[in-house]
Length: 432
Ligand code: GDP
Ligand code: IMO
Ligand code: MG
Image 1 (cartoon, rainbow, N blue to C red):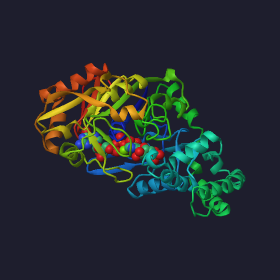
Image 2: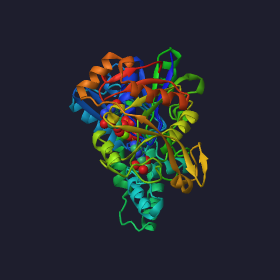
Image 3: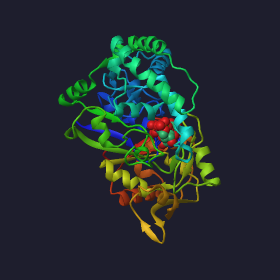
Image 4: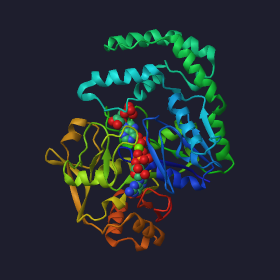
C-alpha cells in the first residue's frame, strides 16, 4: 500500500483540504508534515463546513489517525481551540496524535512576526502574523521549544529562563514595547502541556509501523510549492519546505515509502500576500474569479489576488515534487467564460523563459505568453454535482480539451477533477 503525498503546486489554497479528505477514504492515517496555523484548509461534508489550521484534514474520520508530524510549528492555544471546537460539533478527537519533536509557537514569536514584517518594508511577505517565521528561525538556530519540552515542566522552565531575556532584547531592538514575563509564560504554557500530553508520542514510530503493515498513509501538505522556503517566491513565501521532500523529513519516513505524489492544482491561480505574480488579473476578470471562487483567505480573510493558470509555475512543481498525478480543482469557477487563457512560458527582456526564475526582479518583469481556449457553459451547484455523478466522459468537451492540454504540457496525468467543494463534486479521471 502506498505512502501518498497530497501537496499544493501553486501559492496555497489550491483545495488541499478537500482533496486530502477525499483521498483519506482509503488511508489508515493522515499526517501533516510542515507549516502551522498559517494554513487554512476547508473540508465540506454535506452542508457542514470545517476549516482547519493545524489539525490534519483527516481528523473528521474517527476511525483513522490524524497525526501532527515533527515538521510542524504548533501553537498550543490554536490546537486546543480547534480540538474544543470539534468536540462542540460532536467529534471525540481521540484519533489525534502529535509528534514529540514538533516545535512550539510561543507568544514572543507572534510579537516578533509583526515587528519583523514592519521592519522589512518592501521585503515583507504579508505574513499571517501567526509567529511562523520566528518559530522556524528558532528551530534552526536551536533556540526552539519542542513539544517534548512543553510537557516537561522543568526543562520548559530552564529553557524559558535563558530564552525570554534574549527575546525581550530583540523586541526592544525592533522598537517593540511588549513586556515578557518568563514566569507567567512558563505557568501558562506548562498548563497547555498538561492538556495535550496524552496526544504526544514519537510519531515516526507510529507512521513507519503503519507503512510496514501495508497500510496506506496520506501525507497532507500545507501552503504550496511556490511558498516553499527553498523553491518559492523567496522572501515572500513561508518559512518551511512545502515540497514532497518535506513529507519525508517532516514525518520521519524514508523515500522508498512514498509511491504517489498528488499535485493539487487550481484551474486558475490565486495568491494571498505580496510578491510577483505574472498572470495576475488586476481587472474585472480577476475580480470575477475572486467573487465566484470565494477567494478570500481562510485564515486571515484577506481578498486573494487572482489570475490565469500558470504552467511555468505548475511545471516547476511537477519537476521538484516528481508529481505522479494532478488533482485539478475549482474548474467549475471558470464555467461561463467566453475565453480562458493558460500561460505556457514567459517573455523576459526579448527572450523566452520556461523555468520558474529564482530572481524576483526578473519574475516581476516576466510577461506571460498565453494559449487561449474556448470556455464552457456554467452550471448551478446541483448541476455540477450531477455532472460529477455522470463521470469524466460526459464533461463539456472544451473543459476536457483544457484538462488534456494541462496533461500534455506538464507530462503528468490528471487523476482527480473537482467541480465543487463537496465530496460528491469529485470526478475520478485516472490513477491518483
Ligand atoms: P487549501 O488551503 O488548499 O486547503 O484551500 P482552501 O480551503 O484555503 O481554499 C479552497 C476553497 O475552495 C475552499 O473554500 C474549498 O471549500 C473550496 N473548494 C475546493 N475545491 C473546490 C472546487 O472544486 N470548486 C469550488 N467551487 N470550490 C472548491
Ligand atoms: P494553505 O495551507 C496561502 C502566505 C502568507 C504570506 C507568506 C508568509 O491554506 O494553502 P507566514 O505566516 O507563513 O510566515 O506567511 O505565506 N501563506 C499562505 N498563503 N495559503 C496558505 O496556506 C498560506 N500560508 C502562508 O500570506 O504571504
Ligand atoms: Mg488555504
